[in-house]
Image 1 (cartoon, rainbow, N blue to C red):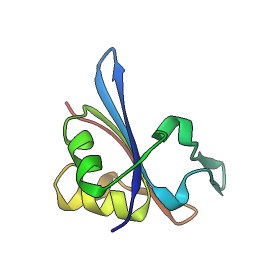
Image 2 (image 1 turned 60 degrees about the horizontal axis):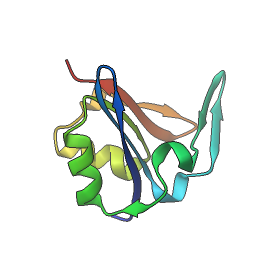
Image 3 (image 1 turned 120 degrees about the vertical axis):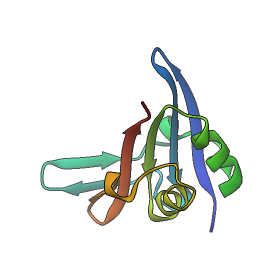
Image 4 (image 1 turned 90 degrees about the vertical axis):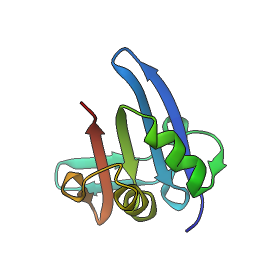
Length: 99
């Protein structure tokens, strides 16, 4: 399934997990007024495998995911609901908070 960039952030309201498909990082996608800028400093500096990315996301309270592979894997694992996914220029993207 490939490699991913994934990074945890400690926030006032819990932990945020950011993850993206490796091949998308460093790119910018636009659709109408929407802009998705995938900077490696936000998603992390090192590539990880799927298991590492999912462990990070499973423990997060807030999620920011981008890319077909990581979004599909998060849905299959039950971390995010399919209806939470939007698409910007054909790229799946999820921002979600667990309550």
